[in-house]
Length: 191
Image (cartoon, rainbow, N blue to C red):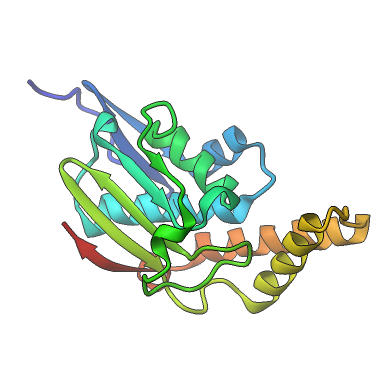
């Protein structure tokens, strides 16, 4: 069986197989599907999939074979939404979010708990990936942690705090999208 001839993915896109079709996605599409609240998380999962599919694995995944584990647990809403939009891991029940599972993994801690550690499976392979140290700026990390603690205490963010968090998230997204993928991720293991 042959796949229909399609244009190759541009540097700003990623591709996945869905049966006999090859689907192409841009960061902007993932961000729109997510709703835009957490652009840094959407940018991170977009670049992760783009890097893994194109560079590390050199393979276009078959959507129905995909699985995804996020060491951020339920706190990574932009990451979860981006993974679902491309790989359909929520619908396929192959999304795993137990933040405790990555406790012993070599990956930077996340401000809301867990770690910047991911496992992405497709086409009968599983890739363990961590975000490199210093990818997440200290200012973003500290303020994000503050926001998580405040919400955990039942206190709403003040308007100026919400604005600062929005700005930091947008700056993080821009930095992730501009960086070479090799500067963002470490491939820890393939099984």
